[in-house]
Image (cartoon, rainbow, N blue to C red; front, side, top):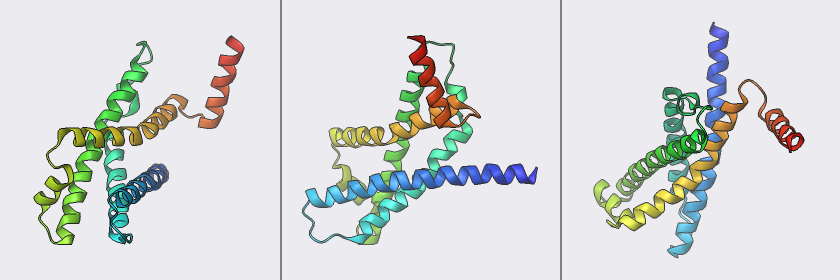
Length: 176
């Protein structure tokens, strides 16, 4: 029992490391892009630190919904388009979580720079709903590949994902 618990924990940590690296790359790229667009001069390392902090927080908060609401509960293979609907709903839910975490990180970054928490959040979005929706869409596109990967892992079950995809591709080719 203790051994299976350890292997479950180890599997969870592997997922978390993959998530942290994936999101850290994206958020550091967005930080780099923002600095370039704003012509903020020499790169400030604190922005990248907050990008990595955001990736760490996000990896934790995205693994919690997987435990509470596994992919099998929101995907019913008997319903025709349930896979697509489940992916869209899960990605939208996760993107809203990402946006919320982003606002928290922006507020904390503002506190470290000497301005207020709420002021930093307001400056970030400037009260413009189009800007908030644009950021949400960017996060939606960032989260979508991870959610699709999670559903593929769920569909593969105990089978290795690579062999599952090659067997599925062979079935499709032979059926046509």
